[in-house]
Image (cartoon, rainbow, N blue to C red; front, side):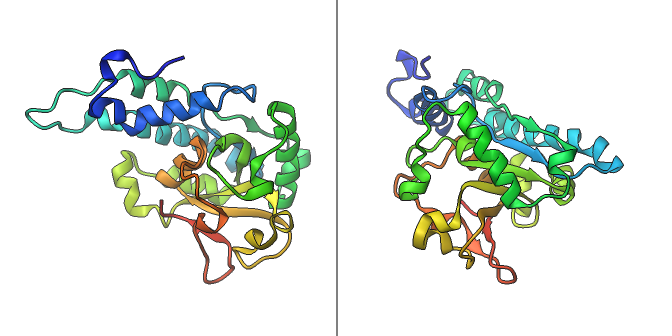
Amino acid sequence: MTNHPERHKYGTEANRPIRRDLERINQASHSHDRPYSWGLTIFRTVYTSESNDSFPQAVESLHALANEYALGELSLKRGRLEPPLDPAPNEALAKRFYCDVIQDKSVLDGVGPDTVGELFDAWVMEHNHDKGRRLPECADFGRSVGRFEFCIMLDQQGIDHLLQMKIPLRLQMRRCGQLYVKVVAAVKRQDLGEHGQVDGHETGRLWLRAGLGIPIIRLCIGLIDVDASLDELGLPDQVDGILNYFMF
């Protein structure tokens, strides 16, 4: 699949971030059974009567956020001399967003990051054909596939935050540090040596709070910077030391 028609080979159209996102997704699609898509696996960890109604709405809110990221620039006012944007890559990116949802009250009700991490490991082994993940070896996200490096642990707080989220994305940016979901990484802290102690904890599953805006979108697509490492995934919270990934 191609994202760079010949007519856009040169000029600003070819360099749009949306096209780069598509290219990265395509390049990373050979090693797993969720090709040409982006998103994260969602593990539901609350099973109250209230959440039975609100959980599906929260998942839809995440889809709305992804849709706004993909399509939002098409509604922005262009300069008088600027040509209109080609909507094809935006529409393609919007259609490719997909999240697996894992629900099992007997296994997941009220569990924390360690249990979710173990279940995520099993999911990765089932769906990722490239069993050797780069993350434990070198903490390098240069070629990461978001859905195989992170998953969402969606509890009642995360549901509430997703339902409070504002669209369009530029409005949500003002609350990115207030609204977040809990994200569990594919590794344990002790497997990462000095990299695993970035949040002040030495053992257990690495997890972080990801702001509902560009931060969670970046994790869904896969981090870009080939020099990025775990200590760039946010700042330790002043109270509990957990990483807060609110900036990008």
